Image 1 (tube, one colour):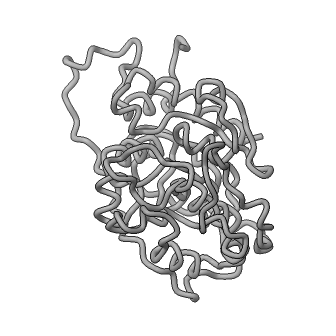
Image 2 (cartoon, helix red, strand yellow):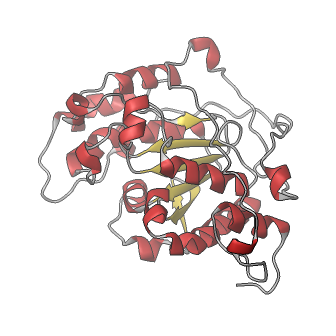
Length: 300
């Protein structure tokens, strides 16, 4: 750890609930009220008018002065040059990793994969909301398409919706989502302006169990089409399933962390899922290092 800390680093540690070396012990500092996570409206099908052919992106990173300033709304950066809409992905590029013990399922139908690769944002959202490609479609309350700004420069990818996300049909709105929002604020970001958040699975597995191979196979084409439409400048994979699903590898998370991977040419940084940090807060320091790596990659 460094001997001195910038305001940005100090703010990051404070928002994550970590002590800053040299500061008074927590019991000597007057407690401050927790910052509420921003309210995200339920996910609804996007109208054709809401998805313009070209869109502006906010700046990749805003300067952070004090902790208070970073939590206040900021102006959106000037509109960058218009980028061409992404071409449909080929069906073979949308194939999800298939486990060795996995049998063929209807969700692996090449025609279905090809169709998903041609959908626009609105039709993709509608298809996810009615999807029955795997048994999770029968047990979910709501499919969770994603949350945030579809024109943001950053994409954060998690594992699957939890109980609160399933109940509300929104991504990352439980305790893990609140921790993620604090991380974003510490970086000078907000999900309303800078970030889009999605999951490997769009439906909650019963009892929050790990995703199964056929479920990942059914859902990966949706996420891959989202990425093609979003065209993020950097992707942050939150947890093992997100990292292995995007990279199509079985490499342990411990070996993927601390490296810069790529998803179809886009830099991809791997870190821990916020839900893991709620159980293992000692690893928040590692997440700090991972997010600093993502910021450095984006600057380059």
